[in-house]
Image (cartoon, rainbow, N blue to C red; front, side, top):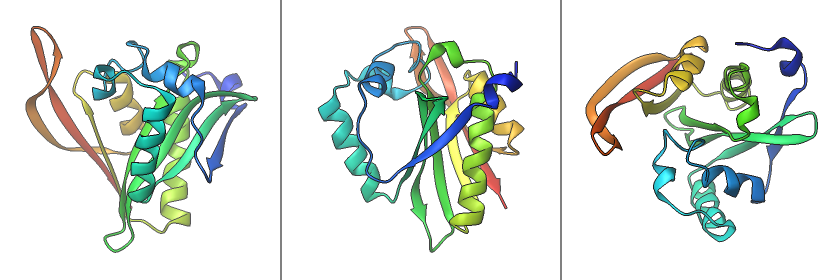
Length: 172
């Protein structure tokens, strides 16, 4: 449920030279936080995250840290920014579980969409998620993303369960 009081204190801070926080590595090693991500299969360290960030920077990435007051609670980024085709991919993580189900992802996705369309002059934003990641799908759909495709049983979610990969896009 959306919590207006909390949303009043949510701020995005653009990161020029991404540094790796211990919190980010902690979030990535938390099985609940990465439940709907291939990141759950990897043991993360500050060194491995630096390598990952370097690869994202090469793919034209804009990072934002998500803050509640002065506490970093997550990250959101635009990556694979393609100026020629005017599109990019969006990714996000609310790492602090006490801030889940408060409308924060929906709120920050909206802010970053505005940045992509107004500042970067892009026309299309895309992403994908596990079909059983209801919260992420809801946050995207509330921001006018449309389901554009599905690959059946793409992800092995658990020992006995496979789930679809859902492609979502937003065209301005």
